[in-house]
Length: 202
Ligand code: IMP
Ligand code: MG
Image (cartoon, rainbow, N blue to C red):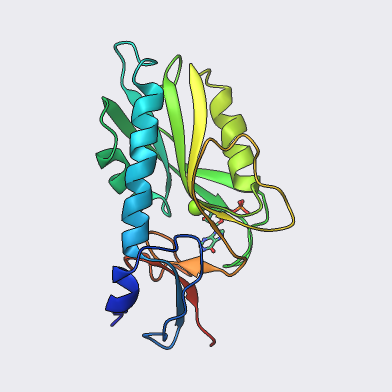
């Protein structure tokens, strides 16, 4: 069982700082972004998207494309914070590499159902690390000739490589540690955690 430190949940003053909390299970580490911080930031992103696209959409809904599986929870919350006509669709990709590292070689496991031609599209990602997955997906979606294509990433890992400068919507910058929760996994585990946490010491 995993429980979340209730104290950490109630403090929402420092959205981009690691807060130390005792690991609640052997394999989990500290909370990086609490459930409350996630909820508040997702609402802000939804409000920003709502105002940015309010005058852009003609008669066709905004298309949100979630990248499975990691973005499923973020997309579910984000779409409820957007006060516009929307459609959602999903793509599933697999990147070759180890559990905690991507190789940059991406394979589409499930493609979209929607035709993106002449549509306003936002690609919704869980986390941008090296940016290789995002670069691949952008290129892949661009050739379908959407009216516009932007990216909304919940987490961006700080690192030596600059993330995509064209990243329009960004939730949180996080330190280099591998994280799980709120949709993100390690070997398919921990996606159901309500907040984003590091993995603990083995
Ligand atoms: P990138 O291609 O290096 O930017 O890696 C992006 C993808 O790797 C994300 O969509 C995740 O699926 C996965 N990933 C990268 N970092 C993490 C992490 O800390 N936790 C869980 N998945 C991650
Ligand atoms: Mg992913």
